[in-house]
Image (cartoon, rainbow over all chains, first blue to last red; front, side, top):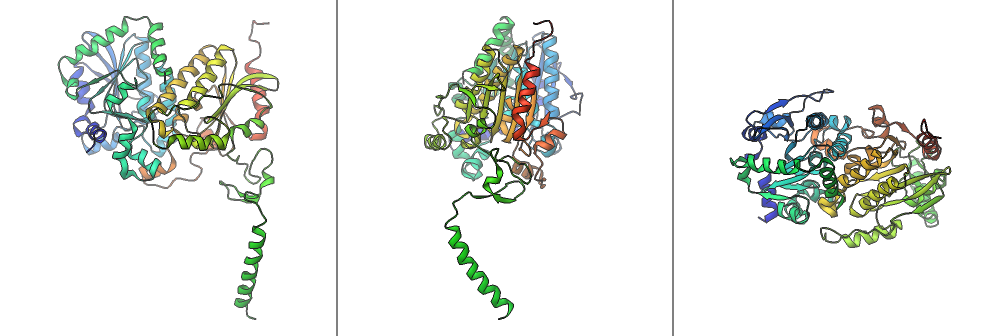
Length: 252
Length: 285
């Protein structure tokens, strides 16, 4: 197996589907907010509040789930419009309360269902992107597994973006790419090679900032690593922070 | 002669007559509407290239679409070309082909226009340039459209058409969504107006960013507006969807579009909106 397809397989590992466990391990006092206050509660998005090394943070994470029921309920980690609305509601609260935001991503993309489409999936992603780019609080994103398409970008317009060694970030899945380019989803491995979706390639392109070993998120020092980064970001004035965040994307 | 033989003789004769005439009729004289499937004499679609039966606006190049709105236009950033950021095999050839078909360096036309004497930063995406897909070059041109508009204190009118991400540019295509959104935000923060016009088709990353970030969102009749392709949705939910599932009319009903405007009425409608939005504010002279 080639290197890129190894990483694709690693990003989809069963070990990584239980994001709630990661959230609970990282934040012992995590409180989950529920609902978008408009249409319902999307289990594919975990959003809530916690403390990190004694300071408040907002946590937004995508959830795939462990059991079949959970995975069906989250559409295997594919958020619906209500999920993006919930994430934005909590991010705005974080801005108001001067709390930094941490987003943890493992999603193949936004859910491609008929109801999601009718409820404005594209519009909700557009809104999240727009709002995240101007939120007056630091944002740290960690890509834990898959990060696919606009559905991932909607949670990753951030100041700092880290990726685990076996994670991917791409315009769409290698299967989808192969199917569009060559009408043959079986050529996914070949697509993965061409797409430059591995953490090291993305770091070389300045799409992300740092590659971490897979184990690091569950390492006891990881809280400190995140806290140090948030402290560094919080030291800047809001106008410097926003100027840098926007410049990061202007470069492409 | 029985009926069967008559039909046989008639059809063999008419086939040869048809073949004779076909040889004299250039391609494209008779066209079929992709929406209502009515066939008609090409000229009946008129200067606005609209189906005389159902009003669907045919996909046309950005330069042709421009002529339907205004004749006062000064182009910006015409020479921005994709640098093939992920060295995708065969991409340079594909670009050259699209460039010669559309007379554009990439899939959007931008510049300073006047609509009824009112200055506006105007962008028109070209659905014929690799499906109007969003890449680094048209993404840069769109970003500069908003940046220049902010600098010159101008409103933006943007006609969108896109099959979504430019596959051949990988993650760089995705980054355009954030890049352009930054410029849209700055333009909005400066108190300037942004009107988007959804053309057929507007999908994927373009729907999930600037196409739906406008203050006023207009759409052409029967234009397709969606995020995920219909076939992908059908495969996901294992159900057939109606043909008009992602039509502008359905988006309008669901509350995502302000008005559906036929092509021949667009310039007038834009002019009216610009007159309102650009009128001196209260307290100004």
